[in-house]
Length: 118
Image (spheres, rainbow, N blue to C red):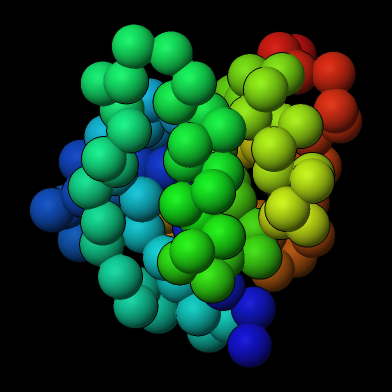
């Protein structure tokens, strides 16, 4: 079972907008392979002084996530995700979760390289 997490800005919305930030995202939706939301979780690290990206990467591992979808990933977040075996994918800003998941299942989202910012 592949679990994916998508960073979201408005988690209470039935089909929220993607949050372009990974480490400082407001929240994440965790989806199963069918695209069904299995968890809506607020990001406990979004207000961290520093190191939010690596902390969220570890939290994603704890949630059993294998792929994360966001707009941007910092270099430390990318290094942490790669070390944990979690695939980081980027999606353009302005997408809703349903569209991001559709693109994920079609394989049209970009895998983020280890360099960090685009």
